[in-house]
Amino acid sequence: MIKKRIKKKWMKYLFVLPALIWFFVFCYLPMGGILIAFKDFSIADGIFGSEWSDPLFKNFTMFLDNPNLFPMVRNTITVSLLKLLTGFPAPIIFAIILNECVYKRFVGVAQIISYLPFLVSWVVVLAILNSLLTPTGQGGPLYSLICWITGNENVTYYLLQENWFLPLVIFTNIWKGVGWSSIIYLASMKTINPELYEAASIDGANRFQRIANITLPGILPTVCMLFIMNLGSLASAGYEQIYLLQSPNNLELSNVLDVFIITSGLENGNYEIATVAGLFQSVFALILVVTGNTIIKKVSENSLW
Amino acid sequence: MKRRKKKSMGLYQGCILLILLLACVTMVYPFVYIFSASLTEGHTYFTEGILLFAKDLTMENYAAVLEMKNIWQSTVISVSRTILGTVLSVLLMAMLAYALCDKELPGRSFFVKYFFLTTILNGGMIPYVIVLQNMNLMNSYWVYIIPAIYSFYNMIIIRTNFESIPISIVEAAKLDGVGELRMFFKIYMPLAKPGLVVVAMYTAIFHWNDWFAGAYYVTNAKMKPLATVLQELVMNSGAGTASSAIADSTTIMAFTVLMILPIVLVYPFLQKYFVDGVAIGSIKE
Image (tube, rainbow over all chains, first blue to last red):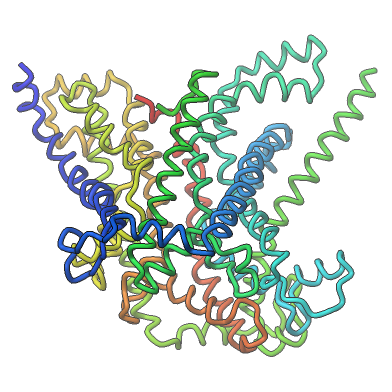
């Protein structure tokens, strides 16, 4: 019986086959590649041909003995936590504001505009930021604005300043993502029954009560789902953004695991240590997502799996 | 009473409008600025600066970009990988989604778990790069295309669109004896257009913007995509240091505008489909 069904659907298996192979090669094989963390890896001998390191956890102890490890982990968590705390609620607030606005044509235009930053790359964002913040010549407009607000009269390279690193990370992160991420919340607000709002008005609920008691509960399942998915990102600071905003002056704050893996592994050929660092990150992310999912499953029905 | 309500309504809406307006200006001004700057003569830009409109209108900066070494090769790489990569990705992901939306396909739940697991588990950057090396993808054009074919979430978007096709249409086609291939190409694909458009746009934008592969997997300068060329320009200009040459900065801006332009020209026409691309609630089995 089942054989017959499989035979009848051979075409569908043919459709799945390339994906099975692709995911095996580009996702499951690298998981096996974690073995590098336990080896004295040489490219010539490959993952399986390389000698086991002696002692087995040599690379781990080397990684843990790195004096930069603690600051690096601290920076990674600081950056990712700040980004989650600001970047996660921002699109929810933006969506609520868009939803409250009665000038629908303007809302449409605002939405289209708000998508644009998401669609351009981080390199473009940095190129623009660079020109807005340049102190050379007359100074970029954003540079002049900051100088005017803070009363700063000295020539300052804000992009290179340590104390401006985190604010710039947070600001560019919100600027880039707020419009795009709001799409899903707006879509979920559209599914709320409008009669609820009418009933609430009749009962004398004010605008803020309506937002708190109808809009927010209405989008809660979506919020939970996205929150779980975002929890995993706590383990990484976001390679592109931080790599591009990093400068010798702000290393104290900008030296994060994501960049360390790329620079030590890909640029300096320190494969084993970078693999260990990546393994730590993966395990941390996995724990976060699974824990988040379990907790949310306990308190509500809105889990990811 | 009624009047007072109306007045407070006006104030409330006024505040909302003001916030939205501010947000819009923050998001659109940087683009207007860089566009104007790219049209401003380099020396004027340096000495006088601009605020909103270009001064000393010139196309020199764009000419300087077009005279850059290897710029045409890079353009060919960028354009071709965007087109080829997108077509291949969308077709293969749609095929996978088509198979997975058949609830009676034996082995389906294993397949879904097999693919989903890769979103929460991964081996990290270095083992991945070693795999690329072993596959002989390093320094090959295909390193831009093949590793970027599948994305679990994009596949889910297409599958959700397939699942929303009315059962009656599919049943009617089955009764007419429509074969599997025709069913896929003539019924499923055309009816899932919004989802396919969104996924195609995601994929195309990924290819157009991706500088990472060009920076780390390819050493030949002639094979670097435009995004990598821009990344090198921006990083080498020293991110705001005084060393960045005057003329250079407006050239970089012209380059930046050329990277933004295709996106700006296309996405407003596709934005009505965006909502169909946020089918996250349905990953659950």
